[in-house]
Length: 189
Image (cartoon, rainbow, N blue to C red; front, top):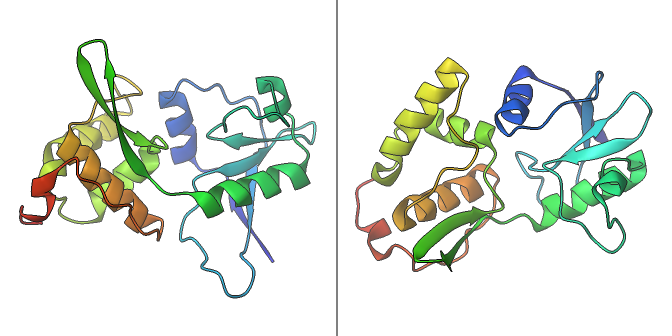
């Protein structure tokens, strides 16, 4: 059984904020239901879109692989390959916090990068965790205006840890253990 979703305006806004040009005019995404005995994700991170010429692509675009070594090959998949790849990626999905030094700056990232629609949904869902209050105020204000100053916003360690947990919960996934913010469980939610 397959579930078909229409390409919604919020995805288009997300793509525009991310600087991605949308070439397809009749976009739909299909995600296959999981086989018996497994958990159906409440959301899908990787979505399949079909172009007018019948080829498909995934948003967000996956990393290049030996099987698909170029952006052109990833952007021109058969429906079966695109659906299979999206299902495989979504089955392996788990948000994590990664830290790295870039020059003298500690960079804190959530991997994979959160979709803007997910951040907005988390901020609208309920009172955000205290570590996300400022981020949510900014994100909701930018969403209301339809403009975001940048596609990537740096996280501090505690903000990233709470966002990672919240994203995994949103997708029905168990969060990995992280020690980037020891005080995360000591702050009132």
